[in-house]
Length: 136
Length: 274
Image (cartoon, rainbow over all chains, first blue to last red; front, side, top):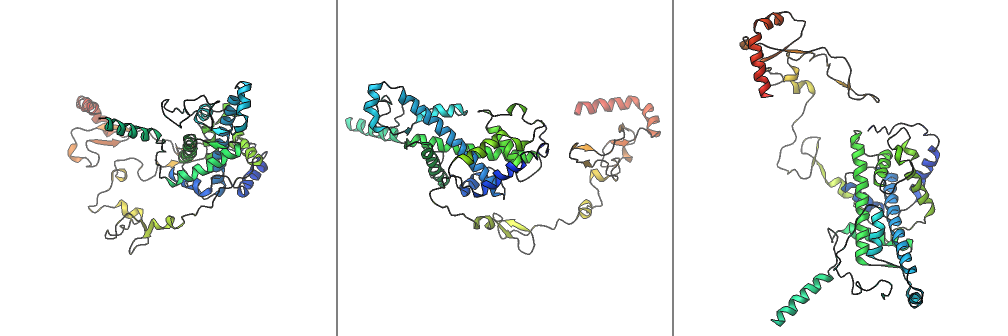
C-alpha cells in the first residue's frame, strides 16, 4: 500500500476548483461550531492550526448527519404514505414529522451502523401502538 | 407485602422511564453537539424528535467525527508527520465513506491525485447547495488552557509539564552528541567499539529519499562471524566470545581449520540459545 499523497499528476486541472472550495470554507459557518470540532479533534490526537481543515471536518460531519436525517425522513414519509387512505385523512391534521428510533435505525443501517433498542423498552407511553395511529 | 410490591413496581417503573444516557451524560460537549444535530435535523425537515433518537444520532455523529480525526492522524503518523494535512483528511474521508461507496473507490491509492476525490467534490457540492445554519449560541473558547500546561523549569530554559512538582530538580543538561558518547570509565558503547565494522564510516546510516525511502546508501560488504574458542582471554569485552572479522583475513582462515570441531560445538550451543 503505497500512499503517495504528494503526487500531483493532474493537480492543475482542478486546482482552482479545490482552492475555491477551500476558500469558501473560510466564509462558510458550519452548524457544528469550530470550538466543538476542535475539542473532539484534540481528543483524538488531531492537531492542526489550519481553520480550513477544521471546517472541512465540520462540513463532513454535517453532511453525514444531514444524509442520515434525510434518509430517516424518507423512511418516515414512506411509512406515512403506506397507511390506508381513510386513516390518512384522519391523521392529516397532525402531519408533523417526528424523528423516531425506527426510522433512524433503518437509515443508519445503510451507513454501517447497527442500532438496536430493546424491544420491551418503553421509549414513550405510545411505543407499542402502531405508529400510524399514534397520536403525538 | 403489598406495600413492598408496590414499591418495587414503582422502582422498576421509574427505571424503565429512565432514558438511555450517552456514555457521559454530563458531558458538556455532547449536549452542545446535540443542539447542533437537532438544528441539522430541523433543516432537513423534521419538526420533532424522540429524545432517544436524537441522543443516538448525536452519539453516532460524535463517533463519526472522532473516527475521521483518528484516521487522519494515523495517516499523517504513517507519513512521519505530526500534523495531518488536507491529503490525510481526504484519505480519512475515503475510509469512512467506503460503506456508502463513491466514484473512484475502486482505484483508491492508485495514481490518481487525491485532490480529485469524488468525496471532496460531494462536500463542495454540499457546501454550495445548503444554506448556512449557524450554531444557536456563540461558544467561548478556552484559550488560556493551552498555555497553562507548560511552565519554565526553574533555572533552565526548558519547559516542563505542569504535572511535574516544583521540588523536583530541573532537567539535566543533555549536552551535545560527543559528550554523550564518552563514558566515565573510558568505555564506549557497543556500536562505537572497534569490533563493529564500519563504525566510523557511518555505513549504516539510512538514506531517506522520496522514492526509495529506507534503502541503504552503500552496498554492504559481507560480514562473517568466527568463533575463537581458545583465544577467549584476548577478546574484547564488548563482543563476548564472538569476534567480528572479515573474510579476507587469513589468520582466522587457518584457525578455522584447526578448531573446526570446537567451532561446531560452539555453533551448536549458540543455535540452542537462539
